[in-house]
Length: 133
Image 1 (cartoon, rainbow, N blue to C red):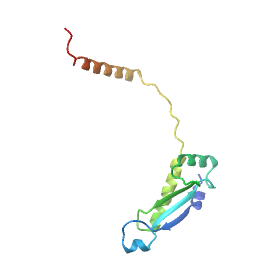
Image 2: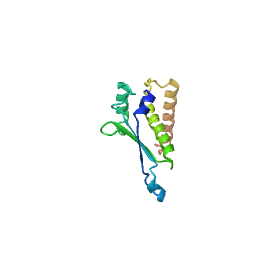
Image 3: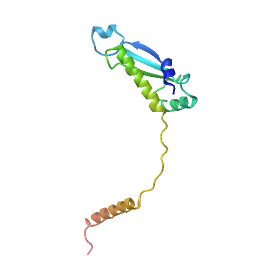
Image 4: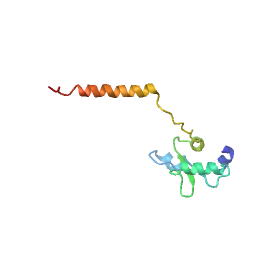
């Protein structure tokens, strides 16, 4: 992922925050929304695009655009910094390929411990029964 190209492709939009806040919230657009078109990005390779489309399928629009919003602070500039960091974190986290799992077998000691535990439990339950005369 070429971070500088990705940052240049981001589209920022300031919108009014929702919720209570009085006169100030009705006049100021402090909420920041960033959109990133994964399918047409020049900062991603084709493999990275496919991986992101697959992993972020639930968060992408039908046209393949990732949209993230931030209205945490009252400052538009701070919200812009936060949303930029969030989108870069989201992209980098979803571009990492998971390690291949190496199947392992349980050790002999753990197998024996499990079997002994089962035997103790069955003895405990067998001792609760009425004795046969």
